Image (cartoon, rainbow, N blue to C red; front, side, top):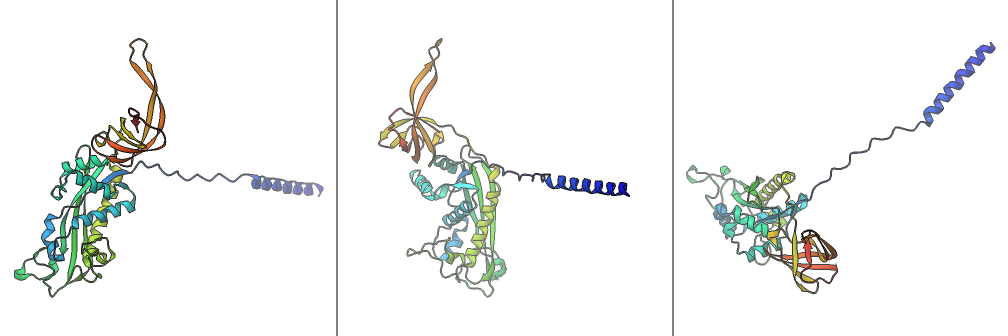
Length: 339
């Protein structure tokens, strides 16, 4: 009997020790979540006004006058790309300034080589050019005299017995500003879900302001069946361009120049867009304080510099740029410029 009691007590003590050991054991470490993969710098792009000569007749019929729907499409695409955040998009004001200085006409909007030159002056990796290939109503749903069909065969004033839907088609090309090579193409198509006898009616009016100009980004235009088709086409086009962003090249540029003129904290440097300088760049201004020469040949093998400060590029042309020096300085002619 005594032996039996001793055995039972021993078992109880052993079980208690095992339980205590299990409770004291640390819980297994949680597997750390995978760290987000670092993303490279966003590609800098500019969006040219879309060419719309193919649909000019249809545009005039719809609005009663020539409206720059190419600029409207471009503005909407810029808004889409900026919102999505896959690209760094150049400001419209900077683009317009360069276009004015270069006398870049509307007729050259879809020319790859000319657009690449403009993009290089702007200092962007790529420039997007495009065309509007369809803009109006889907006449397949509307009877036309003689059984003929096709977009633009009659104006919006010709009210038909059947409703029509609005259709818009746009194409775009992404041009490498260094080589003028076409890096990618995309095509967006939009069709309104509603039909009607008026493409621009029912939206509260489409004109934007006292000048009566077409504002394609306004909610009034967006509420029309034509506006619905336009937004669908641009959204489709923008999504395709977004999907291509990771495959687009980014050009690594080494900038080396000199300060050519000093006026307070405003400096003119002797390198511009040809050397890769672009609007908004932050460049370093430094001064050589000592040179080290090879004792055998007498050639300079190293320059010792002191940093003067950082300067932001505010204007740029092909062979020079204007920068504003921040804290530090003062700078002087001959100081080195680098990125």
